[in-house]
Image (cartoon, rainbow, N blue to C red; front, side, top):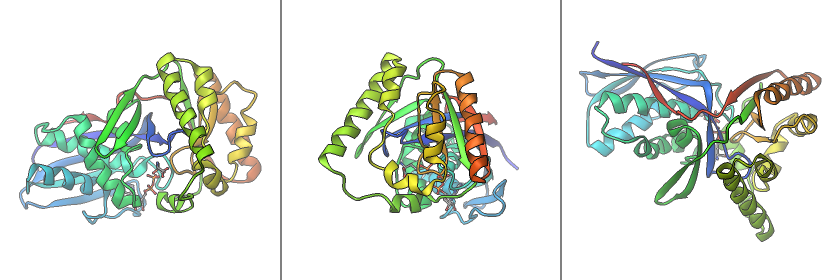
Amino acid sequence: MGQSVTAFAPATVANVSCGFDILGFAIDRLGDKVSVSFNQEGILRVTGIEGDEGKLPLEPEKNTCSVAIQAMLNKLGSKQGIDIFLEKGLPLGSGMGSSAASAAAALEAANVLLGNPFTKEELVPFAMESERIACGSAHADNVAPSILGGFVLIRDYDPLDMVKLPVPEGIFCTLVHPHIELKTSDSRSVLRKQISLKESVMQSGNIAGFIAALYKSDLALLSRSLKDVIAEPSRALLIPGFYELRDAIKSIGSLGSGISGSGPTIFVLSPNGDIAHEAGEKAKEVFQKIGLGVDVYVSEVNKRGAFIVSR
Ligand SMILES: Nc1ncnc2c1ncn2[C@@H]1O[C@H](COP(=O)(O)OP(=O)(O)O)[C@@H](O)[C@H]1O
Ligand SMILES: N[C@@H](CCOP(=O)(O)O)C(=O)O
């Protein structure tokens, strides 16, 4: 076997309530690992997947790792054969950017294997192609933060215009993952196709407030801006415990909660780690009452994004 390169890419929280399809941030530690190496057969193939309980496709045109690398090879005009091995660390259909993390790790590793022809920013459109395959929409609010780290704003899609945003000191995220699976394609299908002028004004005010809050490190403003009048009203109905958790954390000093991506994971932002852990305990109580299993992760915002583990 020739040179092998392994990369890790983190889970992400997309939308962050006020930024439907245009805002996301990366999480620490949780994520997918992908190893790539050249093969002599001149084909792109997924040679194996670990940690997916046999659920993910090996077909190169269906797996987000290979779809993303194929888009990269197409851009280079290359027919280089590459073997891909995926270690799946994220649950599927979780709302934690599982499909995106695979693509981000695959691209980070393949870019190094091919001699770094692209910057990190240039990798994002390749990963968007894989999101189109995974859930029918080429949104960038998972893949961009998974590759770049931190909070990322997608100002425009055509042409792609991304802004990496500051991360206020001390801010923590609690991810609450109830044990149900929600496909992004399904939770996109419940969205209203049109919103009112009033709702558009409210959403614009909140996304603008959120961005200002990041630049000013103003956590009170950030908390007031953590609202979603576009997706949350339709999607929250698919997530048991969503409003109960919001009520349960009202008095503990957290900054607010929302749906992570398209759900079912719920995120809570907090001004420090203690409150983030307390939010996690409240979440366990809420879901115990409902009788639904839940995983809780507490994490800082990951400023690094995808990185090389070994080469
Ligand atoms: N490498 C991959 N990792 C995760 N999902 C993948 C991968 N390749 C293809 N998929 C497909 O993408 C879908 C999961 O994506 P999605 O519903 O968007 O989950 P998430 O919200 O966790 O990203 C599944 O249908 C799965 O078969
Ligand atoms: N903006 C997208 C984000 C989907 O995130 P995922 O983690 O659920 O794949 C959407 O809201 O549909």
